[in-house]
Every structure is written in C-alpha cells, then in structure tokens.
Length: 450
Ligand code: S3P
Image (cartoon, rainbow, N blue to C red; front, side):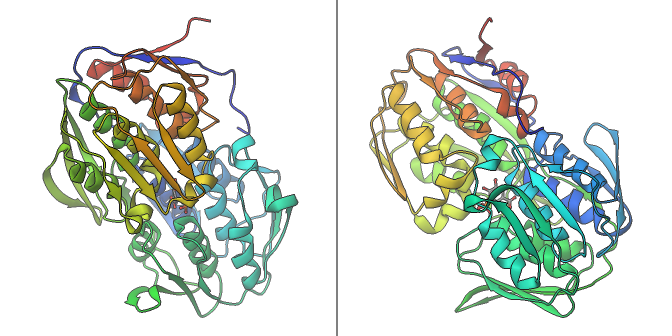
C-alpha cells in the first residue's frame, strides 16, 4: 500500500454537455470512523454504503491487525466485530496507511491509550506529512512517539499503560486532531475535553454519541468545547454512510463549467461542517439546487442538481468558511478560473499540508494551463477567464494527490485545449469509479496510450 503502481497519465478534453445522474461513493470521513468505532465497540456493527477506496480499505486492514474482525459482505456492505474500548491487540507487523492522513491519525489516537506498541508508515505523500499535531496531544495522555525527523512517518507509538484524561485546545482547525484526541480519550478514565476555536467536521462527535458514548458539545467564548466521558462500552450500530460531498464536488463543478450541462448528484451528505463549497458556489452565482432535503442516519442529506452556470463571478471566500470546505479548494480554484473576475481564497494555510501542498500544486498546474494566479503562505487568488476561457493545453503534476488529479480532469472538460495530468492513480484512494462515472455523464477523460 505504501506506494502506487505505475503512473497513469490521463487527459481530459472538451466534449458535449454533461447530463444524467452521478452516484458518487460513500463519505470518506464517515467511512474511516465507522470502521474504527465499529472495531472499538462490543459486538457486531453493520455498515452499508462504505467507501471502498484505498484509504478506507487500509483502515479496515489496520483494524484487523489490532484484533477486530472486519468482513466485506457485498458492495459497500461490511460487518465489523469489535474488540471493545481498551481491547486492541498489539499488531504483529507495521501498519501501512497508504495515502490516508485521516486513517493514520485517527488510528494513532485510537491506540494511544492502550498498553501496546505499533509502527505506522504510508506512501511518499503520507510520509512527508506532519504528525506532531497528533503526537503532541497523545503525549499528554502518556503515550510516546518515535518517528523520523520533523515528526514524520515511519513512526512507532508506545501506548500509555496508565492513561490520564486531557484537556486540549487544538492549535489548528483540524478534525483529524480533534478526533484523534477524542478516540484516545475513550480509553482514559474520567473526562477528556477538546476545545476548537472554529468548528471542523463533527462526524466523530455524532458517531460517538450514536455508539452510546457520553459526549457533550457546548458553544462557548473559548470555542466549541467537547467533553467525552472515558471508558464507555460502545454499543454496535447499523450505519448507512451518506455519499461524500467532497466527491460530489467533482461532477457538480464539472457541470457548472461545461456548456449545456444538467447533472443530478443524489444522496449527498450536507452536514454544515462539510457544505461550505456549495454555499460558495451559490454565492458565485452557480445554478445549484438542493432537492429533496432530508435526514439520514443523523446526517442532513439532499440531492444536488447542478446546471451550466455561465454567469459565475469571483468572490472573496470568507476565511471562517475554510474548515467546512477545506478539501474543496482545489476544485473551487478550477471553477474560479471559468468565472468572471478574481476569486480570493484566504486563511487557507492548512492546504499546504494536505496530501500535497495544494496551493502550490493548483497554482503550478493552473499556470501551465494559462491561468493567472497570486499566492502566499495562506492565500490563493485565481484570475477568472470567463466561461470556456481557460486556454488549457498543459500538464499538471498530481503529486500523489487524488483531489489535484480530479480537479485538473474537471478543468479539461471546459478548457479550450485538453488538460493532462502525469498520474491519475491516486484517484482510487477516495473515488474508485471516477472515470466511468464521468464517462457516463458524457465527459471525455482518457488514459494515455502507453
Ligand atoms: C478529515 C479532516 C480534514 C480533511 C481530510 C479528512 C477528517 O483534515 O482535509 O480530508 O476526516 O477528519 P484536517 O483534520 O487535517 O483538517
């Protein structure tokens, strides 16, 4: 898992309008959490709609290594026989989380308060990402970490034998950090408290409550204060995973920029901590409707309908919206290139430590396709060229980053000349079936003949 196979160069070109229904895969964030909390409950958790991308399959494999039984019953249908909070066994071998930052960080949290030792690694992207944001708080519980310089993987974690509960204010807006602390707090006695200044995705809090943990959330002057009572017996659940808004973003944005398009993307999770992109697109003037809004499995859900939107205008995206659309800035920057005027993305420093440095990856790739960019450590401006205005004709480096790869494939659908990427293999981490899904809508995205 710690490396992809041969690169898969891909090219996307202008074609007819995109039409039809795009059924995107299950939510990646919720899928990781369903597998991990299933493994920490006592008895059998059933999951439907699980994302079967490489990232989540890695988490499933890791949970087996810690002693849970994880079984695939059918497409997206999984059964997890958990070992209970505090029941993790010591893995016999290194845990390879592939490309998955969420996977490795949540799993480190989940094992950090058990008296076991585990070593973690991942692909070149994951091995370059900062882990101090996780190892700092787990040290407060009594765990120790031995990693490479800069706090990078591979890394060995020695779990705390006598964990103490902690009170921790997250230093950056990160649901992964918050979740790692909460998962570590599960096996500490007493109350663990996490405080976040800005709300980040709250799937862990929702799911912990669903599994029967005692957890409260209060909005205070300090921020969101989350209090978890440790050492609960988690009760197994039936979880229906909603479809991923971050994956829906690709066919939605493709439809908005491709002339004549009209695409329905059904059953999308619209948790307000995730839906910032759609608010932004509507503010830019996108023809994007939420049809049939409803609640499923404790999460708000709707069908998204996106139509070609030639009148989109650049805006300044409010920085306090960043956490709710953090994974969507790459594809937003593509839409921005087809809007009129400048789109300003500010307060987005976290983009520099994702699967790639996403500001640099998008800036260089858009420039290669004729778009003017301004960037700084924590901002990124795109000068829009209007509908159909991006020249294209360039090749972008995907940098082992699924969202960079898919963003440029969306760009090529509306650019004047084809847009290429050096490697589409990482798309499988979060969106298996991206190519046939887009082809079904009428897109021309092809693998290079090699
Ligand atoms: C995620 C949190 C975000 C996001 C990632 C998934 C999660 O990361 O970028 O794709 O499932 O908790 P950060 O916590 O680093 O912001």
